[in-house]
Amino acid sequence: RPSWLGVDASNSTGTTIAVEADGTALGTITVADAVRETSAEAIRSFHELGLEPILLTGDAQAVADRVAAEVGITKVHAEVTPERKLQVINELQDQGLIVAMVGDGVNDAAALAGADLGIAMGAGTDVAIAAADVTLVGNDVRSAATAVRLSRATLRTIKGNLAWAFGYNIAAIPLAASGFLNPLIAGLAMAFSSVFVVTNSLRLRSFTP
Image (cartoon, rainbow, N blue to C red):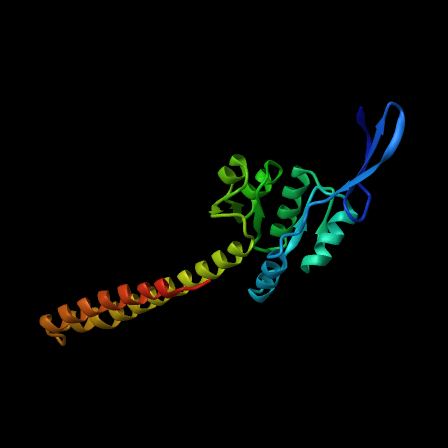
C-alpha cells in the first residue's frame, strides 16, 4: 500500500514526491504546473503596453525561475506568503508606481484588494473574484492585456469628449451672451455637439482585441 514519504520543493522542474510501500522506497514522482501556451504571448503584450510584469508566487524559487524564463518575466518573488504578496505591492506603490494584480486563488485575495487594480480570472475562486475590481471571462491571461487596451481607448475617448465639450462651451457661451450668436444657430450647434460626442463614443464599438 503506497504512502507519501515527503516532498522536495527544490527541484527545478517541479515538486518531487517520494513514494514508499511497506517501508520500501518505490521511487519519486515529480509534478509541475504546465505553463499555458498563451502565457508568453500575454507577457509580450504587457511589455508592448509599457507594463513590467512581475511574478509573485508561493512556489519554490527554482520552479518560479523556470516558469518566468519560459514566459519572459525577469522579476520574480518566489516562496511568498499572501501577506508578502501584499507587502511587495505596497512597496511598489510607495515608489509611486501604479500596480495591477492578476490572480485567481484564495492566496491572491489580499494582493488583489491592495493593488490599484485587481484583476481576477473568471475561473478563479469566489474569494479572488470578490476582492478584485475587474473579473475577466474565462481563464486566458491575454484578456488582461485586452482589458488594459480597452480601458486606455475608453479613457482617450472620454478625454476627447470633455475637450470638445469644454472648448465648445467656452467659445459659444460668451458669444451667445453678447448677442453675436443667433439662438437658432446656437441650438443647432448644441445638437451637433451632442451628436459628435455620441458618435465619438460609438467608435469604441470597433475596438478589436
